[in-house]
Image (tube, one colour):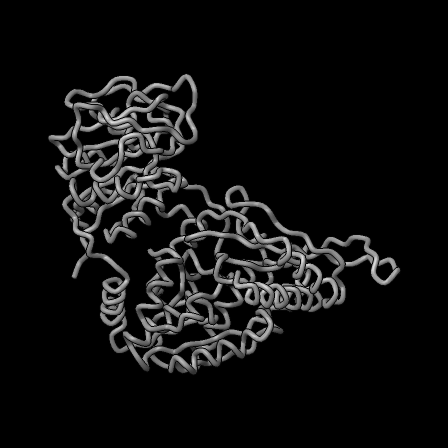
Length: 513
């Protein structure tokens, strides 16, 4: 059954993906497309409503982003958020001007007395919302009315109720907007008349059907790492095509301690045949002397693909390569959904090199990490595997600042093992999104047993997050950090200092490289 979506036009806001997340959490199917998506492609999706996201530009700027004007002639509900509100205002003849003072932060939303809008159903007057804008609506278009205001935004909410067009100056999608999820759900339910029927069960059925149809009697090569993403992809493929799945685990020499054995045991438990390729030496030779993080990622990605191609030639009838690409990978790598800025490259994003003839299958490309976990549970994967912390495709290479050597890998594996043991023993493993150690390749003076030392520094990184798009450093009890630090310094030869990373995302990324 085809999902009837609400479409989000991405104008480059850092919050755009949160709009989709909030709607999906409410059981409403939602797709994000670039702001300049052709009207014919939008029509083909048969949307029930369109949301215009925020963005960093000004609508009156020379290079302002503008959608196909045909969206305003579709006679379906529209919701503009921040920049989207200003676009709607401008298109229908209103006036947008620079604000005297930029407004960033929390604000109290006051409903206009004479307006009883369904979009505010089940949400209280005086609710806290999050503002982030430098422009403002100065004059409303004809037929529009004000439905809400705040202390600094006289037009915090506007609407043309007869045409089902609504717009907010604030961001309902962010955590700080107390009832933002309710407002988005109200737009879907009462304005677009979309029922909350989408969930991971329906997504799984849809993907299994798509895979069967795409693959036919051919085979699919699937790279697995033992992490949540690749394990869910392999299980989904196994459900869809059974023995036409060829699963390959590449031991790139950049894994955590004991990880190869854990992966092999887990796939045996899942009943999925696994081919293990021992390629650690090959990866480390190619990484010799490399210190730039982007070079590391590219070398690992290219080597990974080369090994896959070599292994694929041993098989017959393989035409597809499956990858566990997630929405967050796509967003952070390339601006495929709009004018958002590239943060870093991911080794499994951006398609295959021209010399490789496989067709890509990426069933998780449009969902977030927490949705992948829900999908895994839906497919019957064990909870201990679903609860594993994310692990980057390039492995430990991007947790070593500088050149990757056997000694640095030893320091990293031993320190990381200690940290994981202490987290699990304290019950904090499941309370944080991700936790790992980083070898900084910075040496400092220390004193051990009355002797001077000059050894390595390790950084402990622990973050709390929902989907990896944003994160805050975990406020860990000091006694746990103290145990981790003490054990690492006492048990790992070559480390004499441990530091804790208290950077959130943004401005930092979760991984160091």
